[in-house]
Image (cartoon, rainbow, N blue to C red; front, side, top):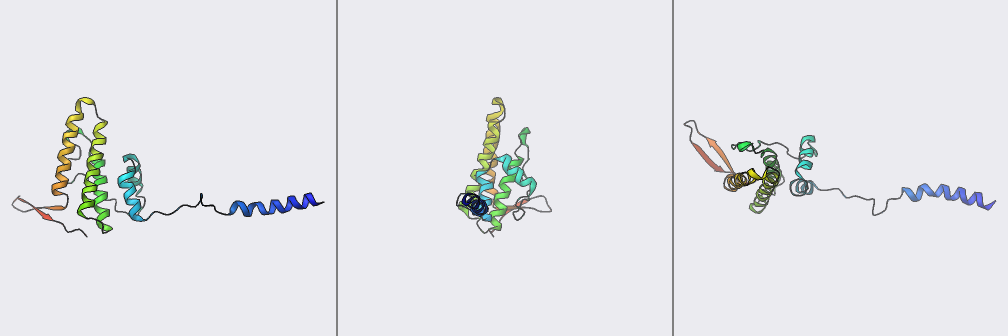
Length: 165
């Protein structure tokens, strides 16, 4: 008599104990800044591109002009994805009021890392040329990355400093 009652009581209590969250099942939500940093500095390029293509999360700025005034694929090297992640860093750090010179250097250094990672995947014969171009692109963003190019009617170009937001 007591055994069926105990089994019924145990069966009734089972859903209560399994429904209670434990520390190991709780997850914390990332801030938008943490998400930005993860996508920029932690995720692989394919993971970043997957998030970019899905525009996920939608609250981030996914816009890009690719490699700006420079060729996206110089000498056939596909630098576009690295340029897109670099733009992502600049645009979101500005939007989040975190675009300091220290963070700009960190984003630029990550750009060089992304370019070199790409170059590691090209043929050994072309790797040196690819990495040399990666250095040129890196030096360009270090010099002009916080400036805006203005083309005048006479064809001349002027570079203006852009204040961080």
